[in-house]
Image (tube, rainbow, N blue to C red; front, side, top):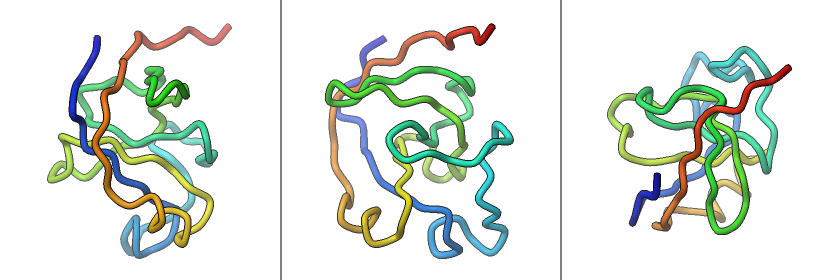
Length: 100
């Protein structure tokens, strides 16, 4: 499924990005990984692979419901997340891949 003009933002595991309950663990129970982890709406299942600008990410985390219409890309540090800022782009959503 192709989604057009999706708002992309960035986050890290700090309390500024994730709130006072920031633990460094994603909704899927694993630590986030730069270049792999994204947070997305609860309508998109955990494990779903998403293609953004030719790079494949995996939905491993969840957004606050008030940000349900965007995708949040994980960065290792706050400075890089701020540098990414807010962008719009087309994304391709694939079915979750099974892990055997």
